Length: 331
Image (cartoon, rainbow, N blue to C red; front, side):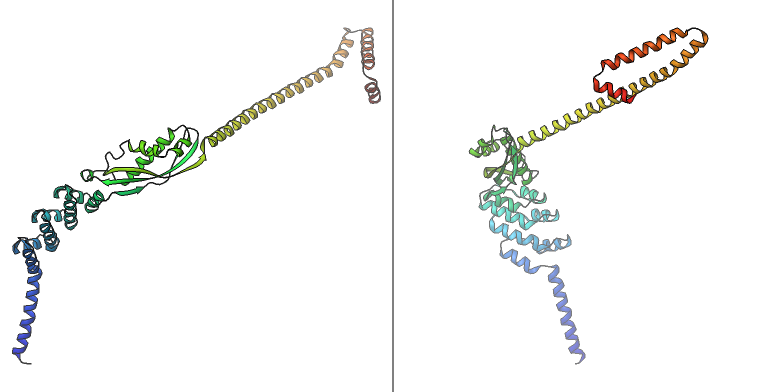
């Protein structure tokens, strides 16, 4: 191959590279598609998007759909929402769906809903087709002490005006559960709840539970009602058991005090007996001292002995025969 052929090849490669770079930086095909769809946008505007690090297709394609739907949006609106971190395509789809459903929804509100982290397209769809939220089983106790287990289905519709700053499904479920507990708790008997489950629906629905939420409650239907435990009887049984334990503790306390008092009395009796024995042991010594000192005569001592013998004889006569023999045998 001569130098001329090599030059042609190099020139062709350079031309292809230049054309590729030009088309990547200047989206000619996207500009042609926009013009064919009736979107008036200049090629310089598309190049400026590149400079602002905006993907032109993320703006032009939603703009084509909005123009075809007759929404009357501008490129600046879509681009500003894109730069704010929003999903332009989803917002445009939501606006088209709202227009078709005769729901009043402006671009500013839709963009705010999207930037708030909510799916604006799903919200519009929920405004057209309400959603059914099933609550978990809620256990409540009637005044007769019987537990009632209730499961409800809540039909809600998205409230476009309260989507920004409104509470979500968890709040709806919590409020419905609170209403069920209140309604069952105010019922005189669990039979009233079983006979009229719609009483729960009417009472809960009349409390305005959707206030401050992103939804509008359309209806509350009781899906299932079951009878649970006899909470009142269980509480009474537990209370009786607690009272029994308290009474046992008090009785044990009184018994311990009685045992302590008895032991104290026994100790006192033992102490008194010890003192008597000690005193009796000192009697012979005192009598001996009295004889030695002349305070007690021999005749007085003999009279004392006679009195003691007479007392023992009288005591043995007063005892029954068996005890008297035992006394003699023991003596």
